Length: 79
Image 1 (cartoon, rainbow, N blue to C red):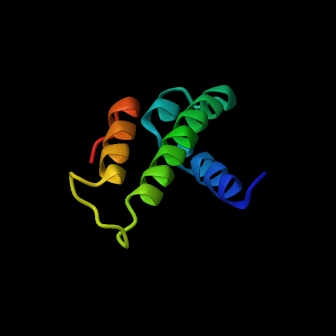
Image 2 (image 1 turned 90 degrees about the vertical axis):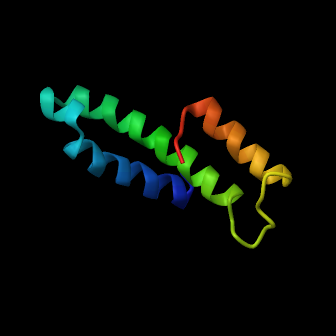
């Protein structure tokens, strides 16, 4: 597993413990479900961070801006 995936996987596991969905039903199975959701969210956020690097010209006419907006819309990520 790539170091970045490993980092996000472990971060998601730790975040899952404090998630309200897990707190309602603190079982191992629920924590795995919550962790999977958080892991996916972290991957999307990481991708957006890469696309939104500040060294690029980043405004509405920029194709990277459009790409980031499409990713946000597709996954329902708010700014």
